[in-house]
Image (tube, rainbow, N blue to C red; front, side, top):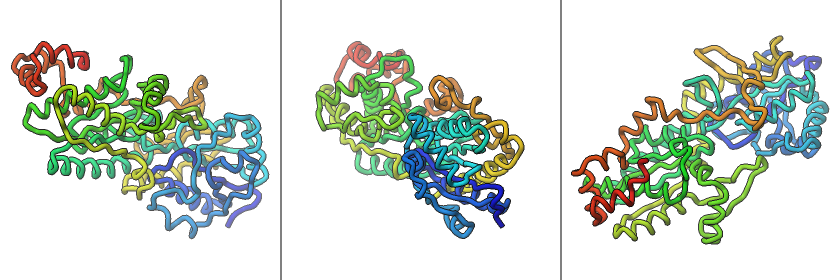
Amino acid sequence: MADPTRGKLGIVVGGGPAPGINGVISSVTIEAINRGLEVVGIRDGFKYLAAGDVSQVRPLTIPDVAPYYQRGGALLGTSRTNPAKNPDHLNAVLKGLEQLGIKYLVTIGGDDTAYSGSQVYAHAKGAIKVAHVPKTIDNDLPLPPGIPTFGFETARHYGVQVARNLHEDAKTTTRWYILVSMGRAAGHLALGIGKASAATVTLIAEELKGKDVSVELICDIVIGAMIKRKAQGKGYGVAVLAEGLLEEIGETKLREMMEKNPGKFGSIELDAFGHLRLGEIEFGRLIRTTIAARLKDLGVKLDMVDKDLGYELRCADPIPFDAEYTRNLGYGAVKFLLSPEAEKNGVVVTFVGGNMVPRPFPEMIDPATKKMRTRLVDIGGENYEVARRYMIRLEQSDFDDATRLERLAAVVKMTPEQFRERFGYIVR
């Protein structure tokens, strides 16, 4: 039975959906109630609290949440409202939590929600204990090595199923699929899908760091893979591109392209956190259209279809890995909040080797960027090396071997020297 003197535990979900959110809500609620706390769910992230509205909450009971443990979506909804951006909004959140009698807060989300949670903890001055459960299908939060963010494994699982089906369709119909995977800051999801589905070629932003990235460069890398496939007698394939490549191209170049092609490839918009709204840019269509034009200049025609992959993954029912994982995380969040350590720090909850490792906000959040440090794909490691070894794409060795170079050049009716001049830059 709940003890009113202990205060309430509130749950808030921020950012985009990810498989397993309901698993966290369920496990937090059950464990908190079993420990004598009253639990309330805050609807649509910090959206209403930041506006001074404390009516959009609901009490949570074990019968309320138990059926949702293995269900996708978020029974509390979510939003990208950033209360830390405006002092008035943050004060409204703090006042609202006080009015609701919330002494313990579990935030579920990515780096922006983590920062919002850290600011609630800091400004509440000990009156509210905060534990953040890291969530994103992008897997880009700085958890211990080998530990994924919840939702990633489920998103990859279903993404691989789609990619495999598209590969079979590509083979059957002799066409190419340009598959754009979610992953703003890091290419883990794109690489995981491409590698596990044996996609023809996968391109992530990490491998282009430090280069002058353009739409043309990205297209030429894919075109190089297409030429190499045709040289092998195959006119089909699947190219997986991480949407984070848009960030590498940059807002300036994208705006210039949009201005030259008004309304053709979407629009440039920013979200509440100042990020490019990547979903507003039709990246797949942009790449497919540009590739088609460049292939035409080369005298090559290939059928292509572009497909964005991401929204259909975010609310999928969690696979067993994430169902178990989120139960651990939810339990760990409540255990931490009721421990003496919660008096000292707000934390990000992680599990390593079967044990909870709460990591204080200052260790996880960069004070300069006000975000958690991004975990990128290590392109110097064997995991990425293996992925590259099994891709079909132009490599330096193709230009060093005269026989291979001649065969590739013949596909586009060029001399070896012309081919080297045209495509050699993409491997440097």
